Image (cartoon, rainbow, N blue to C red; front, side):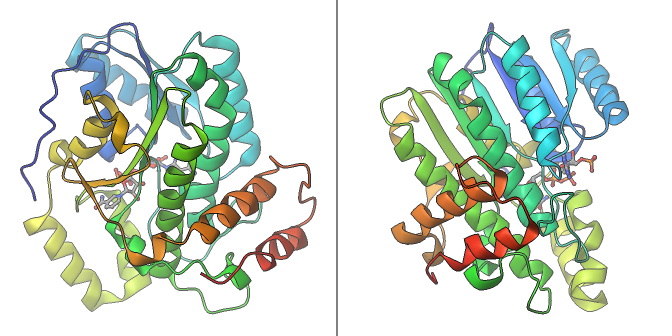
Length: 316
Ligand SMILES: NC(=O)c1ccc[n+]([C@@H]2O[C@H](COP(=O)([O-])OP(=O)(O)OC[C@H]3O[C@@H](n4cnc5c(N)ncnc54)[C@H](OP(=O)(O)O)[C@@H]3O)[C@@H](O)[C@H]2O)c1
């Protein structure tokens, strides 16, 4: 629904917010709105020049001077660790973490750590980032983690035998769906793990918004489907302002605590797809993710460990 707005007037004076991928698109609009509400905004972006330009634009438009940039490349676990370390060392508090950055249907490619790019950037990078910032989030409670998933999670399967698309022909849409299903499972599991801590978490579909996410559609889906999708996105899609509203709603609206773990669309909780419901998969995905990013004791030291970790999970 193109016109849905977040109607909360909540102020964020004295609060600190991180938005990943905030130099453009939905992340930029989200950061701008939260800056208007008085928060300190940290733009977590891979390109510092683009990030600084975005920060300057936000400062000028909102008159909030408390907007800073830090480098974060979600395609590199080392970069995620370095970013988190900087935040943990320099920030007294973190009240809202918005896992917004993403790539959609690029040609087959890998992160620096050898993960399929969409799964690595959209999901694993944010999984590691959130986990490394959890102590600060707990210390700052009440605090929130908001992850931008997508309706396209319906296309995901989470094929445990080949999560990194090494054994099958790469399907960019299914792979995008995998990364977004994983964010839905992540949100539900995190909500359970955070019970009683004051940290709550939400995920969402922002709507269809014609942004640079669509740059790979033609190569990935072919010219006809690309034309169709671009027409739908341009004619029936949301504006950037409207596309940011569900993220903003999940980040600021008062009284959402009992909705922790849920999936939102148009500022309202909805049921996500049937493939997101398996508690066994939720548990295994968390364990496999911990191993892939090196958070559990059994750190995968070689690429082969990735496949080994996946092999242990049940078929969803
Ligand atoms: N637009 C839609 O219709 C739609 C629909 C459903 C879900 N979503 C989701 O909404 C989120 C925001 O998308 P958008 O439409 O605003 O897209 P966008 O305009 O393309 O913005 C994506 C942002 O992610 C950043 N990013 C990409 N790879 C990164 C990496 N390795 N490390 C750090 N940042 C990285 C980009 O940085 P650079 O500028 O450096 O590339 C950019 O800031 C994404 O998660 C997307 O999947 C969008």
